[in-house]
Length: 183
Image (tube, rainbow, N blue to C red; front, side):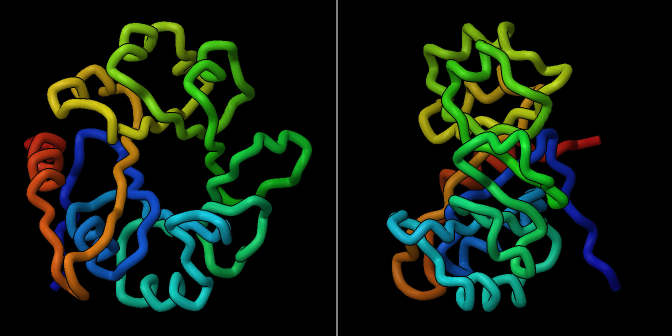
């Protein structure tokens, strides 16, 4: 018998996954993407063999690898890059990590990830939603502010386990309960 996937009101990308506990939790809630960081000097760095190991235990979300270049092609369903490479032939789904101010200035068609603050919420009407698929990192927002981001994807954060296999998800449970599409 196949499990029914939970339907969320918005697309969700869980970034900086560093453990199986987070990966399985987010997959169970039906997030669209899990992202692993392969940038060696990152606090969230994951070696390719560890990413592969976690991927084998999780079904559902697409796997994105955050990198400085288009590498780990066999490991990822897509990428998160820190630079907009408009001249590279990109054959997999690719997100670009950018600053909020760049969204307002204008960008080529594509998928983008940006931080957002409470103060920047008032500037959302300046973002070109017709040509840009934008995901906002909501770590700095109150849950009741998320309603203002209904036309955007959400980026949430993985984190440390209390001990292997043990972690409290109370705050995230509240967010996901808000995001469940009751239709």
